[in-house]
Length: 169
Image (cartoon, rainbow, N blue to C red; front, side, top):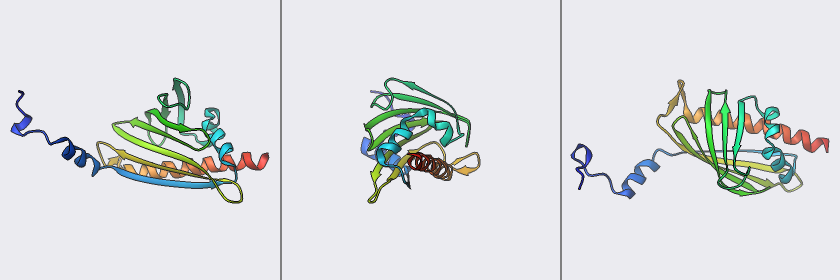
């Protein structure tokens, strides 16, 4: 049997899991659009619309059948920092919800996105994500703050694009 590192036995798996869970951060964000959930879904899943929604991307590449569990997306960001996001789709109910796992610069994030009908028309777009990573700070700012700002800006731009499409039809 191997000797434990530093003369200490590794923690039991439940202890290790508990130690990791204490560092997970959850963020939630939502917007309401005049577009129906199906229209918002079509805009979200159309990667060609991304340049109208955000100038943060240098490129997006798909591996596998887009928007199906197990497919992968490689997103090259240029703002708020230059990085490559590797994303794996984990669940997808077209027009209703989608989930993925992101890996970027040592951080791992699980994110869910929901397209919910609003009484009287339109949709509530709701997302939550949980992340864990090597540091609480990135480029002198809180990682949570950077992600919250990114979500706010991206989803507000997405809402405006959805509203534009809804009002033009």
